[in-house]
Image (cartoon, rainbow, N blue to C red):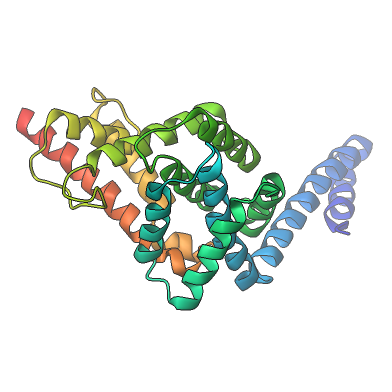
Length: 274
């Protein structure tokens, strides 16, 4: 147990200000000991069983995805196709793909322990906001696979968001961002991930604003701030350093490219008005 902060704080506090300084120094030393203990725990967590933590995150991603897909009663071909698309984007080998498919099927079972799995996700992430946010974004993508967010799916997403520490307003904003991305990519045959078109229609421009999480009338400074925030939260190298499973790196890169593309669209539109 950390005590040196309290001991030294009380000692020097007494020398400088007598009895009052002793109590004040003891209190400040106690706060210092708690802070050091917290940092020490975080360091031990991030270095301990990192591979196991990554595998837990990977398994939970697809099992919760399967649970959400099953929420409205029957898993559609769109949900299954989206899961396969995600596996393709991750460039999973045969073994990893089989694990993802098994996890997806596990999530569809009637007795799937959703809240226990989400607790494991929080532990495997060490409470890191960006990893938890990416997990939630993936679940929203799965729920929106057929172009509609059904109430039963939203009910499950609210449980997921709440267990991971996201407020109702944060969930609503992330859903709006994911819906905007879905609409944006509804060009081209098959409805899969498409390249950003240079034909920036009003609807597409509106989607770009939503992807960054800003209003169309936002100032240049606000847009730049939102862009930097999004890039900081989704930068592949930072996510990798914080424990993102290697299998998900390609998806993180694509997300960063999407954010960059949305920002570029908005900048070009702003340049036309100058």
